[in-house]
Length: 148
Image (cartoon, rainbow, N blue to C red; front, side):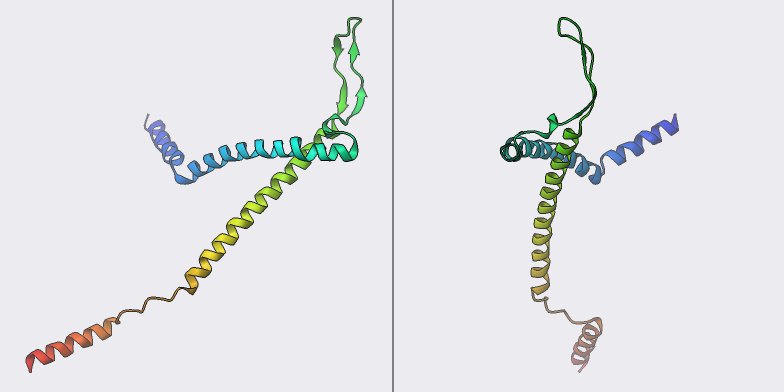
């Protein structure tokens, strides 16, 4: 029973560490960011690509290896086997846009951080106080004055 309790305590320490909480927040924000990027690709970029290339989505592009088999009523008996290279291209475009957005965000954060560091380095240093030796010498001199 002691090992289980120790394991649970260790797990609690792990979960409530700041890095894990930060990572969880990053995952949630990343999920929301993914939705925004998908909207950017599907609603803004792909219609422009479609106007140029004639199709608004790459997901329709495929190589059919075996066509679907339909019965007399038109119901699918056997689904088609196809290589969906259009979906792959679409995912590459999404990845590149996400990577560009993350790069831009990191670049902005690094620029701001560098500016703060530069300001800290430019700030005049506060004058250093007297050294221990200087304080001891001052105390010695004051004591000599009192004796005299």
